[in-house]
Length: 62
Image (cartoon, rainbow, N blue to C red; front, side):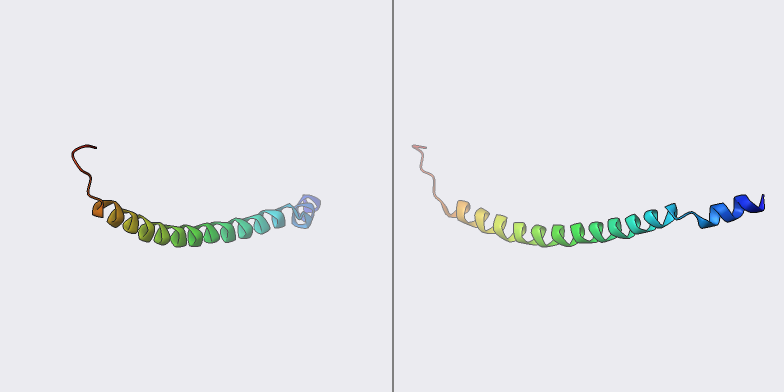
């Protein structure tokens, strides 16, 4: 029983899980930051496009 406990404590498989968890947290944070930047830029661009298309007068021949 004592040997099984020491064997369990000596395993380093859990360290990989901790590393991957930190890597995934950083990746999620980066994705949220990029999404925020792209979202703001798209709102500005779509507003400009809306204003441009609303200013075009389409005649009845269209």
